[in-house]
Each structure stands twice: as C-alpha cells, then as structure tokens.
Image (cartoon, rainbow, N blue to C red; front, side):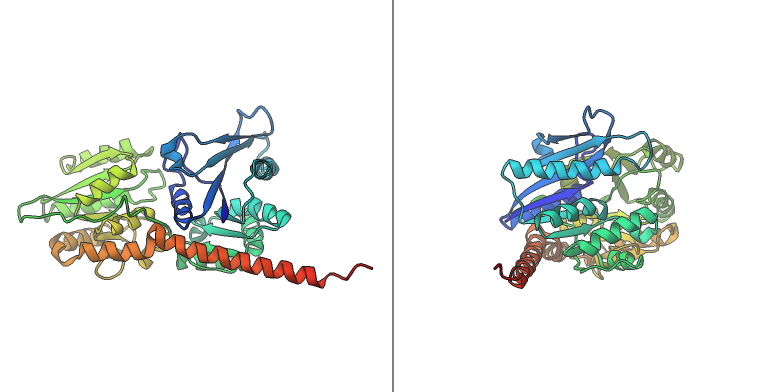
Amino acid sequence: MKVLFITNWYPTRDFGYGGVFVREHAKAVRSAGNEVVVLHLARASKECRGLWKMEEELDPELSEGIPAYHVYHRAMPLRGTSYPLYLRSAIKAFRRLRAEGFVPDVIHAHVYDAGVPAVVIGKRNGIPVVITEQFTGFPRRTLNRAAVLKARYAYRNADRALPVSMHLQRSIEAYGIEAKFEIVPNVVDTTVFFTAKRKLKNADEKRMIFVGNLESSQHKGYPTLLEALTLLRNRRSDWRLEVIGEGPERPEYQRRTEAAGLSGAVAFHGAKPKREIAEMMRGSDLFVLPSRFDNLPCVVVEALASGLPVVSTTVGGIPEMVYDGAGILVPPDDPPALADALDSVLSNLDSYDRVSIAADARGRYSLEAVGTQLQAIYESVLSASDKAAGVAATSKPAES
C-alpha cells in the first residue's frame, strides 16, 4: 500500500539528527513492502517569497531512499497568526503529491501537531489516519491550552493513536484526551546496530559510552553523569567514557569535565553518523544515559540492539525497555545512585549476556518487528474504513 508520513520533525541539512526516529519508522513501514513518502512540515520561513514552498530532499544520506519533501510557510509578524498558513501549506503539498500520482491509502502523522493537518486531509479525502506520539511535553505537563485543543482534535479524529510507550499513553490520557490507543515503540536498524563480543582482560580499560544532545535543558543529564563519574573515580580508575553528541552546552561541559580532573578519562567526540556510533557501541562495555526526562529514547534501543548493558533512569518509558539482566535503572538527578550503578555493572560485566540482550531488542524494536506491527494496524484501519464506507453507501435512500 501507499503510506504518507506527515511530520513536524525530520532530518535536514541543518539538523541531521532532527526527527531521526520518524525516518526509522518510515524505514520500518518500507520493510513491510509499502511505498512511503514523507511530508516534513518544517518551520515558518522568512525566505518564502510566496505563502509556502515545497522542496524535495536530494541528499541520499538524509533520505535513505525514502522520498521526502520539506514544506515551509511564510512567517507572519504576529505570534500565532502563522498557523493557518501551516495548515494551508500541508493541504497544498498533499494536493501536489496527489497531482503527481501519489494517492496514499493511509496517512501516518508523527506528533499531535502534525496530526491536525493529517486528519483534516484524511477527512476531506476519505483516508484513514494514524498518529504516532513521541512528545515529552505530555509527561512533563508543558502543553498550553491551544496545544491541548490541537491534541484533543487530532486524537479524537484519528483512526488510531500510537504512543511509543505505555507511560506516554497515560500522560496523554491525563489531559483528558481519549483515543484508540496502541503502543508502537521506536525502531532500530539491526543491520547497523548489532552485537559483537568484546574480549576483556582483568587489566583492560572498561569502556562506557554516552550518546545524547548537549542542550541547555540538561535533558540527557550530563551534569549528573559528571558528578557520578567524580565519585566513581574515587573507587576505581579502570574506565573511560566516550561522549557522542553536540549542542550549545558542549564547551561548558568540557570545561567542567577538565575542572573535575576527568579530561583524561572522558573524551568528547561531537556528533557522529549512526554507523560510527554503532561501531563505537560494539567496542564498548556499557551504555549510560542519565535522562532527566524522556519517552522511549532511540539510543537506548540502539544500545540494547548492540548487546550493551544499560545504566539509565526511571523516567518515561525507559523502565519498559530495560529489564532485569539488561542493566540498572536509578532515579534521575541522583549522582551517588548513578555512581553505584556504574560501579556494579563494571564489576559484573560477565553476568550480562550481550547476545541475549541484542536478540531481545531485535525481537521488539527491529525494522521487521515494528514494520509488521504497523502493517497490521494499517490493514485494520483500512478494513474499518471500507466497512464504514459500505454502511454509508447502503444507508443512502434509493433515487427515484
């Protein structure tokens, strides 16, 4: 079947990691034998000479073989007045795709805000709509009144709502929003992320890896990690941490790492392509992500697919991912607990079965596993839509 993805988040030349998880879902849908096209409803742009513009993504590293179009709309001078243009640009972009011969059987939106134009288009054209949700604003309770109204409209009119974790579903419901929910997790490409045995000797340096954006919100918890590493260094020195990620706080984090006397044990590598991250994970012994808030982080899925034991926090959907035997979870913002967990895993690496951890991740999060789940959902909503159309047709009075 033909599936149209409509999303506010997607990789671009300016932000190669933006919405990578959406592209992974698109790859999962493609793996089930479907034709996929992506409409990325990007930011308002002052460069728009008209009211909107649509640009095809031509970089093969960003598209990964999936046709994608970035849709921009003119920025308006008054706050909040650009939204009608955002909706209009989505509708115009859909019409252009349809005129070029792509008529989707299903529309798959990502995040409630993109769900609004998705259901508008779906209603006008008789196309079922499903919405994947990944926004941390629901569990953090940061949605304002306008956002709640958008979310309520999108989910009330969608054929299926697909939060990536049960925790996120409950957070959506806490706003009084009702929908036909089904949990569909984030995805990992297991041809890129897979396990390889790393041979250890007693004197070997144990390698830990952290992957995350270094943002001012301290979303991924690097300051907590730094405090924990300072405590860990007082107990043992047989470790090294590789930090993968970029962001405005990187210079400050590096300065604080040096001030703590840890620059010899912690290396900052900046942003890396996924294949390089996967290779570094295969050469590591432990993955650490002390998130302060999160949903179902793709990097944890990738670490598990690489067979790494995970040390992370009890936030969002992470407890739904990391089970006994796959790592240790601690409260967020708790450096002593994090140091204890790191020490425990480093001391007991042989007790973690990398092959088993990777096999479980493959069964839950691979392109094939998630693609099969999404395929069943598409077929279900299409069947329901066909039945509803049939009932509507038979209920019409006969013409005289």
